[in-house]
Length: 357
Ligand code: NQM
Image 1 (cartoon, rainbow, N blue to C red):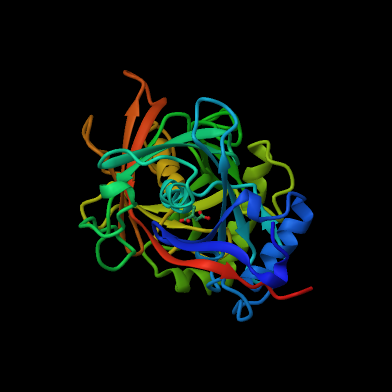
Image 2: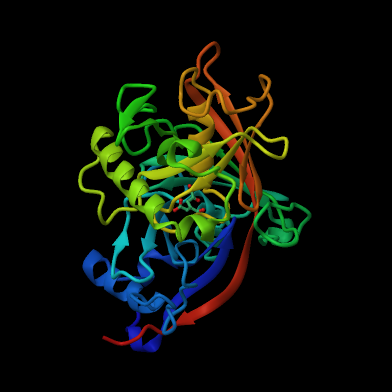
């Protein structure tokens, strides 16, 4: 590790619909308190504008991925995700992020942690936050990651090269069970909820139960202070039922408002991050919604136009839709595996200079 005043090696990437700073673990302090303090200074937190750092003044652009070679034979690299608070001096490892994950394989190849395949490279990634595995495959003509391509994902302008990401152990990622409370439906704060954890602990609520349609713009939902208070109360109460202790400084569970689909998709969503509202939806967040609404009796099941067997779920969100392909254990709604397609792009590679303490 170099001295902070000399700059820290860092790559900035867009991963899916998010953006973050990617580091090798060896380029950051091993001590987590020191590391988190350094990351706050790199991102420019706490400050609503993150004006003195490289954070983008929104939770979706204040993210960090830390990568190292895996110790065991089953995966190639370890990926630790950290959410860096924007206006709060908080760094949390309590959630995973499937969007930043989209760039991890390419970053690992750029840094020489893995060898390239012939035309495609597959990287087995251990997601340290949830101790689960994702397998990313992306084009590498001539042994280099190829970023340009023709896949468009909603929420990102233009097109880029596809990154296929396959998951096989998302159910119960954080809480130990797909239905962490043991129930399909619970009642919290006078509202029916389905608590579900298929990669992202989430609390599904019908938007109309909170007095909104679920089709509002994120900024309109954010400025509805009565709604924000109810979402906060539901999140805290549901977290206790899900066995998650003291989530005041954690970004999980997420509360997701559900509504009937408007554009030929499966379901409409508005996802709280937990305070700001997502401009699209997270990768694992979308998988949790899909797994939840598939269960008969769950909140959202009757609002959804569920796909025919073998067809993907199209999770509508404020800027389009997110396509998730889930394989269920035959004859059940237990999740066996899933596949999503994302894109990612290297934005800069160099040294970042943190504000000095
Ligand atoms: O759910 C935002 C994002 C995410 C998380 C959040 C994500 C996921 O879109 O896998 O990607 O829910 O905090 O980056």
